[in-house]
Image 1 (cartoon, protein in one colour):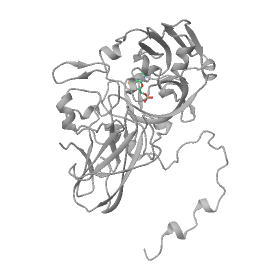
Image 2 (cartoon, helix red, strand yellow):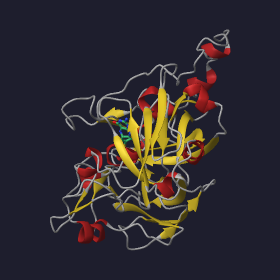
Image 3 (cartoon, protein in one colour):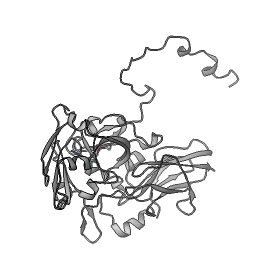
Image 4 (spheres, helix red, strand yellow):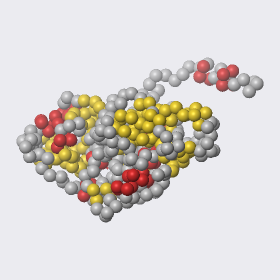
Length: 390
Ligand code: MTE
């Protein structure tokens, strides 16, 4: 206004006084002004919060790394903060030398650090039948991406002298009450699977498996066994409860697909997204995330008219295998209604399907592996909402 902006004209307190000392927060915390970006539980989704999920607020994050405190949480029977001094990893089954490792044993081994996404197989599950949830946090927030540090599982299997001729699978088992056990084919176990203790440069957070978890790049989150306590080498799939009863894809003909583990190529616009509002016409940066369990993202196209016309988005570097890729594209909003969509293509040539294309093959009764193109509708008022466009 005519009097000028007091935020410029009046010298603020912080420019006139001594600030807080170093190490006032020996472990740093977010600004007191940043209170809205939180992991959130979907009300009424499960009967008990110990067997539930808290979603990552994708709508407010930048780049590709999820801050550790906002990494999504999915527990079948709650989480524990396990004493690393008492934690053990046993390797048994078809091995010459059955072994028990302490955390100290493991952390002396040659380790690697790699950036990977983790996505729950049930991410976007609510949208199989119809539009169900009000924001990208709830529709896509069982997705996070971190730098994980650990020893390759192949190193441990070699150390135990696993049976190279007859081993077909490994079984991974967690130390929580849910007895989480998952079968992993031996070729994958020997490829890029990590027995990890590190996440984003520090030890894993308790909610994410401290002190030890399996990292199974490209594969649905359930196989990333947390609080990992045992690996058994075997010659056939174990068909444990989490692979014989749960985590199966209901097909339209009444049959079930088992052991569908890969997270296929998928993308979503994180801003603007449902629950947000455009305050004015003019320039917007449409931004989002793309990922594929089979490799790198090759291209992302964006439509602002519900899939009639597509433009190719800018991929931000780095573009890594089985990792989130950030895309951006310029947009001038005229003030007319619009439908925003993104469509990812990975380096195998696979194209992310439309929801009706996916339903034609998979029906609507499934829970898992919904990687359909997501549509966000921008109303004339600027309000953005979740819609399905065929
Ligand atoms: N491991 C154990 N031991 N117990 C669990 O409940 N949940 C699984 C998996 N590993 C689970 C587990 C599921 S379903 C997912 S999606 C991922 O962990 C979630 O990992 P996060 O909580 O670190 O996001």
